[in-house]
Amino acid sequence: MAFEGWKGDFVGSFRGLELDNSKRFFDAHRSQYEVEVRGKMEELAAELEPALGPAKIFRINRDVRFSADKSPYKTNLGSVAGRVYLHLDARMFYMATGAHHPMLHGCGATGRRLPGRPVRSLRGVSSGCVLPPCRWAATK
Image (cartoon, rainbow, N blue to C red; front, top):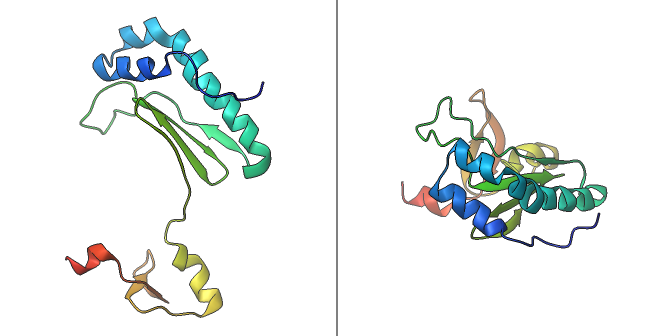
C-alpha cells in the first residue's frame, strides 16, 4: 500500500501517552497506535527502502533498566531507512541524516588537514586529522 501521510488522530495517540504513560492506557489504545501511527510509518519505510536501503522501525517500549524515567513507552516513533532517520511525535515530523565524526573516516585517505583541534581515536592516538573549530569549543 502506498504511503499517503498520517491521518486520523495520531497526534492524540502521542498526547495521550504524554498525559497517561501507563500500560493500561496503551493497551486501550494499542489498535489506534498500530493502524494510525506505526502502520503509516511502515508504509513510508517500505516506500523509502528501494531508494535509501533497508528500513527499521524502533519499538515504542522504552528501555527503563538504567533510566531514571521509568515511563514504559516513548512519546515518539523513530525509524531509519538507510542512513536517514525519521522522527514523528505529537508536535513534529522530521528527517535527518549525518555522520558520526565524518573526518575520522575520510581524512586519512585524502591527507587533508584543516585548522582546528586534533582528532583522537578511541585508543587515544592522534589520527593525524584535525577537525574544524566548533563554536562550543571556544566557550570552554
